[in-house]
Image (cartoon, rainbow, N blue to C red; front, side):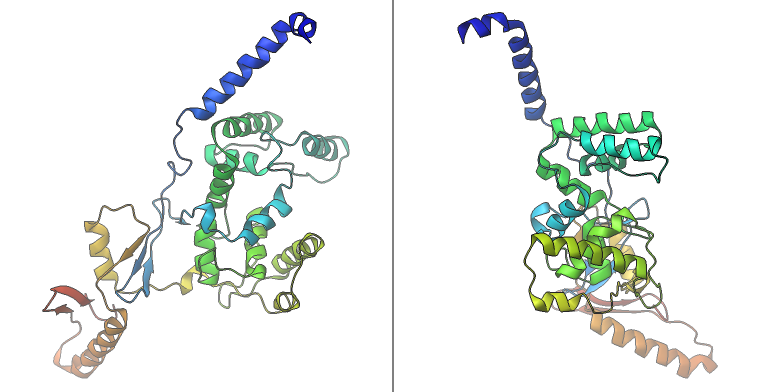
Length: 328
């Protein structure tokens, strides 16, 4: 053993220095992967009823969700669908790259992807052009950088919060909330697998009026479900859910209430919180809004075409209703 160390001392020292360098890189503090993003805000009334969800600064619906608040079905489905070796590679999978290179450039077939979750995150985080060989090599280098700087937990969490889900919807939190009206911790298995397949082809057709998913999206989800059943036990009641019509609520169906009131809060508030609870009573807001419109209809002949109302709780001086103009 001693002779082996003497004979290979230079190589062993190089490996030791490399290990120390990697350890130092990992232990150094790094900016959170969420730092470059802006996020939507959700405004609720005093009964926790959603009034409005705003767009982020880049006109995207985006919510940051910690990995612990994401359903295990989403995480397991993602690893099964995208990157089964995620916890074992260093940012790229050489076997997948060789297979994809051969099929794309040597076999003359359709282009095949071989991007790991880390590589996809690198492309989205640094907005890389990966359609060329040089771009792909840059993506691999960045993926290795991510693996050196961040834990697998942080990379997986960031991917789910960067990924596109169709339209102008990004992040698992925004997609789950908009499409299924629930946080990603509460989705059932059909919903979870639907969310998993969307980032690979976020242009899957969904009827914008009815929200019914097109055949391609349903097929992709069901194919993933077949693979899921090979690995996980599935209760018969869950299996039955996959035969039901797949409906995704569209952004146009999101609540958009009390615009004057919410706009005032947006202008005045500097908080980074993604959820803001207001003093408004949304049910009372709707009732008074209807009464204002009826009042205008009855008095239009008198030249009254608009009105505004503010209702304040005299005990707390909190605004319960604010009507800036008719029909709003």
